[in-house]
Amino acid sequence: MVTPVAKRQAVRHIQEALALSERRACALVGVARRVVRHVSTTADDAALRQRLQDLAAQRRRFGYRRLG
Image (cartoon, rainbow, N blue to C red; front, top):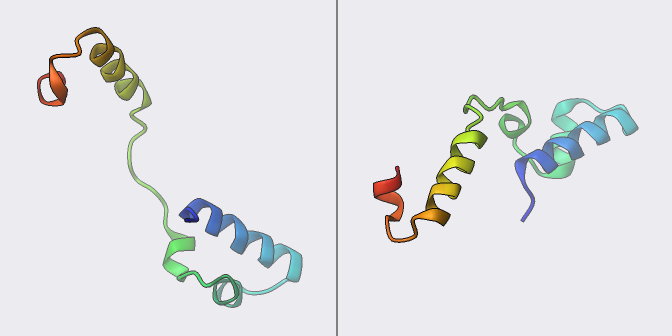
């Protein structure tokens, strides 16, 4: 399974190496153009995830619902 990030990188590489348009590079890789153009809007919640993992390690019996 290839991630969307890897697909974007492959399309960019083909565009630069072969001087192709985005449309042709996407067709060559087999990726929809919307995958290449997508910009993630999710917030970076790494600190929250780490805090929940620390709490889960301390209090194993609480479960995800109680920790959340």
